[in-house]
Length: 326
Image (cartoon, rainbow, N blue to C red; front, top):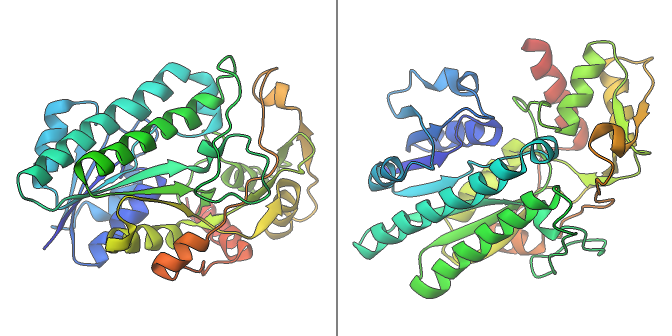
């Protein structure tokens, strides 16, 4: 029985990944400091004899070494996430996104040098593309960040450093790594506390309040169901051709944020109207947003024959149902 280590496994994506890996017959070890995740997300798993939860930080070198020693594969999802959190805590964003990745890569490399075959999946983000003006982004496109005086770019830049480091381990030592750039992953258990747009809209509508749309709502995004994303991640880790590669992971079906808000209203609380808020009111006077964020999924589809199963309507229905049960 293989043992999977998931950092950040009590978070939104990590909890779904934990469930999926248990269903494949793996033992699962989750380490999470609950800074953004919560034990509530994995509560149903705690009684499973093949599941273990450790409240700890992946900045702890000794803990990381002990856990990697037990692992046959590592999924590194722990990170500072969400635009709101990034603007509030830029120092923590940079430190929490880079140092633990250094520790994990070094320990995974050590294990491989000792003769074990331990793969590492690095969760990255569409934020690494910055403000690249292309209509659709491929994995080989340039990363275009703004000024260092704008804190919102710290997240994308820190995750880009993670990618460079992981790829350096691959090129220099053949450490078996896979990098996945997540694009707007949504679904049950996601919180709106850190700026995530869909749960914010649903929470507002169910409370009888108008969803708050930033700017004019013309921003274009592609939303992927967490179940589709988790399936892709596991398949990539089981595919030799994915090693040393970077993949966009998400959906390529675009929708404007205004259209999303209107869909949420129609399904959750018809009769409400959208309200608008400037970026300055929402974040800060110098905040820069990305107007269009659409992934090219060709590489992913060719590697693992990936096609998203969930429509946007399915996703919104799932999130509404989950919030009603909470």
